[in-house]
Image 1: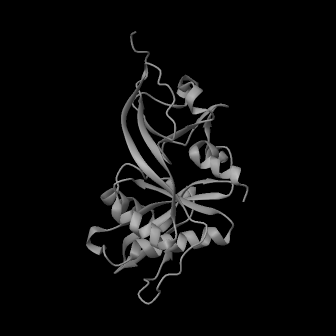
Image 2 (image 1 turned 135 degrees about the vertical axis):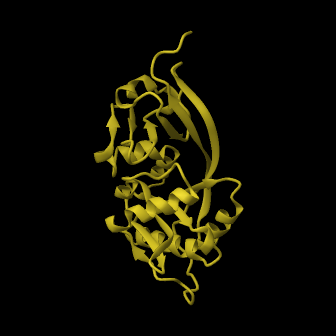
Image 3 (image 1 turned 30 degrees about the vertical axis):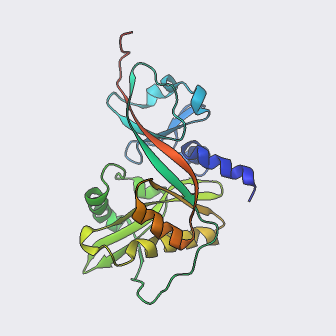
Length: 236
């Protein structure tokens, strides 16, 4: 793969919304967002010089968004709430897993939608919405007719797929489910010539260990900025 393409991972939302996920993109030539029921996230072509007023026709007051990477200057009617320092990892070659205790992994379909929302709402609320599953393929482990672990694909761009929604029900941790699911989704993407990448909060030592065992390597630290559109122009 052309090494220049890896630079697109510095601004992954924009490059997803202008390539593989362009059918979902809302906005203009320089700032775009996903539909509100899909992802609360937006991207800018050139973040450091972007004008967020250009996306205001496609947002409503009170909406929160994550910006991944460099943060644009915020107009006075936008507010910064928080910054998450995350690690971005990539995997070009997957390590072989011990398959003795690998649980059965099933594709998740529309029939599993409510179970997916319930599980991720319990473990990782605020990042997954009704139509998030349309972004890619999702897989799960089902025990006694109950979804207990899942993982899938979120941001997608030419040559790269983000592995996301890696969650396990608290009653079923320690079984290797997350590792098996991430390996499954990663293998599928590598076979399709897409480099898998992922993000996790930088103090999540357990996640780092799992991903490193699979062959993921750290590419960079990248920030997730949570911002809010307030609506009316705020006074000077």
